[in-house]
Image 1: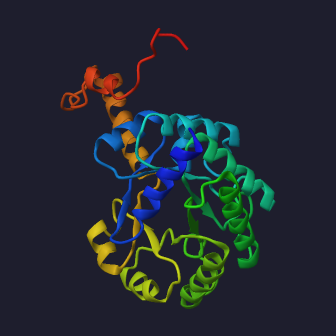
Image 2: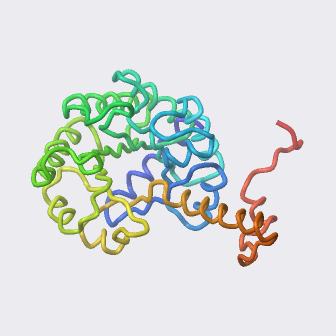
Image 3: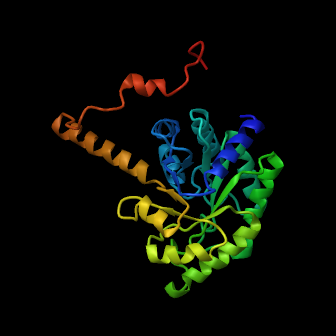
Length: 283
């Protein structure tokens, strides 16, 4: 994908954060990305867990970076809307590792990232200054690639990993928000925080727009929008629901010899039409 196309898609993704609440369904392979785009998504995010599972690996940077990049490229190739990639903690211990990952996903067609401040293989979080330096490296890599509007969604796992005393977590989130904003992040994702009162309290005090997740048992988009959340995703929830349905139907087929679900609404021909045909039918 040319740098000019990446720049245009990055501008589109950035503009979607300008006002209102951007809803980002999470894809895990080319087929899910194509279906989500067809459903009307203005942009699509990947889910690291879903991508890893689809390729036979566990989540938590257990999928080699090259496979993550290849999967990102397959998704970007079948959609016209902007794609933002979940790169977990950046794939590596150093700032250069993070920069290399950003360069790689840009080359695959992603125009944004979600990046965590929790090391993949260690307890706790990176110190704010270390996490900020990693974000700064990500921003520099995108600038060097020629895509200055690349969108960085900085994820802090203060609530996910239950860091510190519960009463102090809001202050810790805000401390990190300030550091991450200074480092070039565009928004702040606080997973595992579904308390609307807390979200409403954080929104006016954060220097970055807040990102949150929805799904079964969590506040819906309308509630999150009312709380001031500007970006909503679902993580691996779509992948889990799809595979739960597949398991239930497979179990029914194996035990009862039939599948009683309604006929598929996504017909074979329709599904096939989502993907480009090779001119000669060969790679």
